[in-house]
Image 1 (cartoon, rainbow, N blue to C red):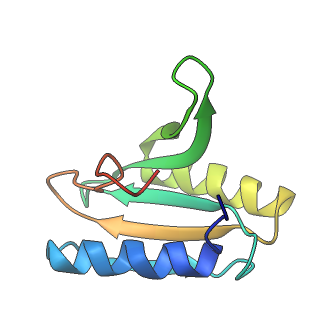
Image 2 (cartoon, helix red, strand yellow):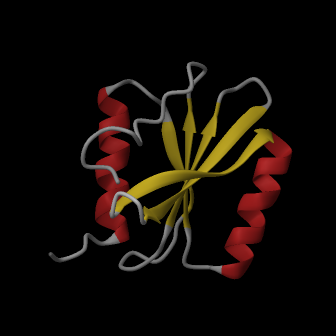
Length: 109
């Protein structure tokens, strides 16, 4: 099975969010082909969660795992550190008071 490019996945994810009227934007543009993606969920109350794609060995599937959660400034510091390790990293920021990110929907893992 061929792998989707990072740019294709990001475009599809942003489109899906728009269909649900969930605001989101690219906070950091990574490598179009092979960049990894972080998704930051900003609940607009000073709190945030950042997710990274991981591999779950028990189910043999890709999943979105929580990398950091808490005060938005602390979560932003984690994202900044990750970008320091990997300049090809994409960061998508989702802004939703209800905490919707859609990463648990089919086709997004």
